[in-house]
Length: 180
Image (cartoon, rainbow, N blue to C red; front, top):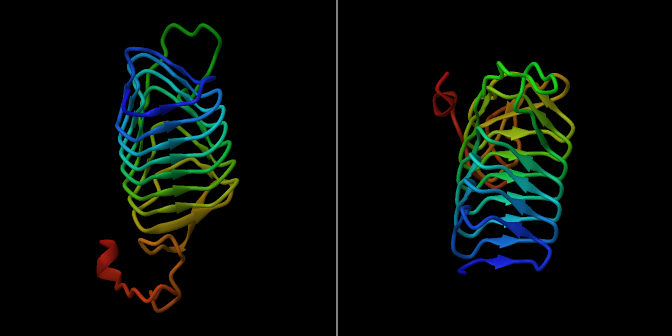
């Protein structure tokens, strides 16, 4: 085993876990789940078969990553984020259709956000804590609220850009950088 597994973590033998990944207390990883290298999956998280998690991803406490959810490399998912995988849930529904959710490279999803199935959160986007994501979030944008809406642009470092598209880290952007 080339990864760390807390003694209370449950990991199915048919799950794929990358080298250097850490699975903390009460984490449950099902058969068919794929987790990349150097990830940190915190206490009480659940990764269902069919979920795909890239390299260098951080998933904080009590997050369920269901079948159909793909997290790109370097994604940060805050505590208690809810990925919804059924737009019209009913118990024992026979005609259920999986709608895939994709979170792009370097994106951040704040704690207690809800992400509806069938959406894409673009690379380096930032979704604010407590937001409800019902539609796509463009790359390098900041979105928050219920429903989450565009509130500005984000730097690769995660900070919000000012009106001149400059980041406190010193990086500058132009509108052309955001493919508008």
